[in-house]
Image (tube, rainbow, N blue to C red; front, top):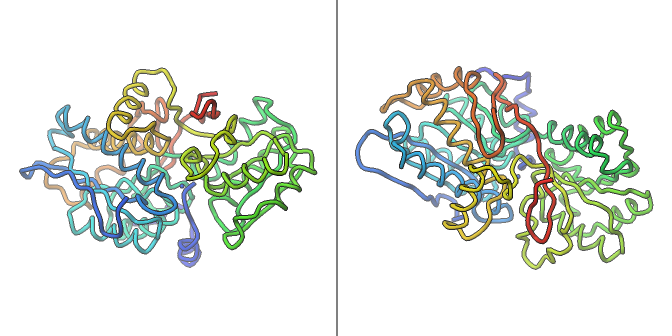
Length: 391
């Protein structure tokens, strides 16, 4: 497969070790829904269901499962019953490739994954070589969909940074903003760079930009103090929920109470162990999904998710739910039939991805460009009384 963008293979290989999102069992474990007979369509899913990013992966698996159950109950895809095989990669690129190989041996015909960006970059190269269709629900790094066979449901890192700056500026949320970001992580630094560039266009002044690295991400007192001294009304956090929870706690200890705004990496902060969730009150984050939205599709999905898994779904669950329905729409448009090889499936799905329109949980009238990027309107939520509330 040819690459969509002029990427250096050496650069991509180097990034694989560091990329994560935009982000259950041990290696080799799986949750497989099987059926009798040959009239099946096999979808694989890969993500961390154990480890520090398990909130993301578990949600993806759960969301995908609900979609599969609904589609099968309604007659499947072109009469084919979907088989779903979920593999845990523990947010590790090497284990993600191993999971991909396991799914390939199983007979996977399309992949929902991977969940996190670093793993997705590694797996995308394998899927491109095999000509296997890849639709990542939440891999936001640009390199995740560098090849012609790959598409995504979520916004890319650059788009998250741009959209965040636009949302803050256009809604008059703050004029003086500090940023605390992970300079060692491509997800975080990529969002920050685009945010900084767009902030200038939105009349938003970045009064402090304080970095940390993977080697020093527990004590944020210096970064917080500089943000406080700068007079920032809002602190932008293009980081993951674990580090964000520490920043909120340490800011509270320092008596600093600005507004906080993040991206999809903050989704999961309410589930951090031993974190006082009251500190997350009024935290805002860019998201394509709000669980309290009152449209019928969202209400049905949230009710089903609560019934099956005992919790409220996050945007990663919604991304994966939409991913399965997107594959269904493309498969029906392409006229897929049982028994097609993964390569035949890929050759049939890729050209129709630019022709379909999908109304999903994460966007109405979603479409895709030839480079794999979705087109849909961004949204934002605010944490109120311990739940995500649409803004």
